[in-house]
Figure 1 (spheres, rainbow, N blue to C red):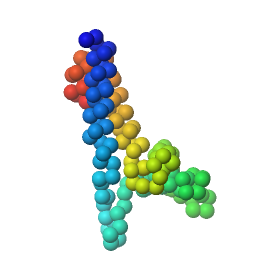
Figure 2 (figure 1 turned 90 degrees about the vertical axis):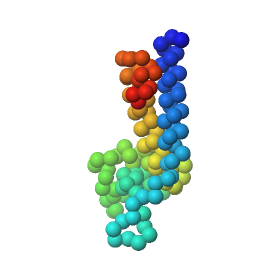
Figure 3 (figure 1 turned 45 degrees about the vertical axis):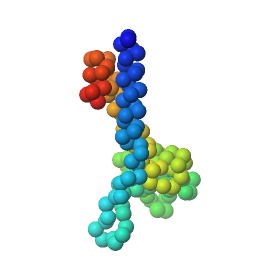
Length: 128
């Protein structure tokens, strides 16, 4: 088998493995209960994707009267990815987690692509 075919074969197997390990568990995290609230769960995603939820519900990312979300200064891309998730999957917890899971799998595959050019593909797959 040629090196290029082997790279693609190992990369495809790695993609399937990473997707099988991550994607079925998107809604499995129950969150952390807040200190002052009873039976209320807060998620980190809520803080960093609230602009996307706002845009999905109202049609605009910014609300000058509300002056929210405050995290636009540091995580504006997450608001946009959250908006895309809501547009594709509706208002649910999985909708705000799939963009991050997809980017994470992409980052692992990019690491594999980098390593597979510098070593044998199966070794790069084991490292990743």
